[in-house]
Length: 335
Image (tube, rainbow, N blue to C red; front, top):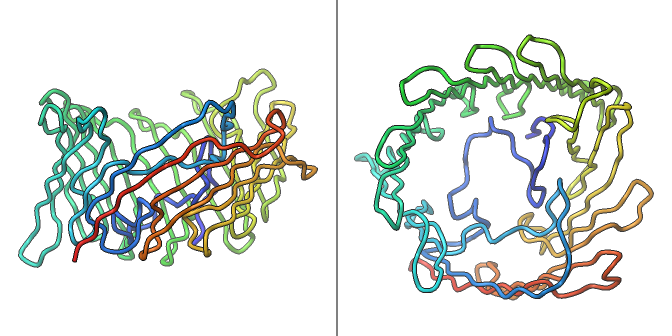
């Protein structure tokens, strides 16, 4: 499955997935865990190394779920972090039908015990989401899918039920996202992106409140063939984007109002090809010179989940690989 181009600040340690793609992974798998995980508890020890991740591709992924619990089917029931012996985060109550399918998910603040979100779950994912603040309704969203499980529409509403914008998408049966369009609460088009799989052409355009074009570009087979934004424009949504060039390889485009695009390259290598446990992440400029890098060492258990991670970083100022952090995880499993 091939998603539309990834825009703005993104994380590339895994593929940038299309919003149309039906969720086929469990919560535990989405957190980078394998096997019948029951719980995970994490801690980190940081050094004082001066190294900062850039805007754009993230080279060092955070621990996705520091202190979490899952049921036997991989659904998350607790998510957050323990600080000074106290748990901060959310506790999740699942409701199932007679066949064992999850139909509702209720998320409660672990400290106040207040309900802050309710998800209605269908066969392809959530179909409705309601958000509460201090016990009062704040917003609601609805989601629709095609017969193949691809998201087709996402509508948002405010507390009074008034429309607050929506996104429509169109995908091929295999999940390839061909078109995405986002509209404001006034039903005005904010941006549109299309992909032609035959010519491998992406086209992207944003619009202002009056319907005038703010920015537009075209990428054909991974190469920028056109880019336009007003000459006096500041950095805006859409002028930075990333093109996947191969397995673990990405090109980063930073385009400017003089119609020039700076290109850099990001390369990831993974532990045993699992695609979510990187052993290296290197960011190079257009000439191939190394700009930033991160390298990882692991100890893994019998389910191939890491229990110890050491993160080493590099930049020109450091001049050598330097230990940045050491992470520890204790994982228990359902028997």
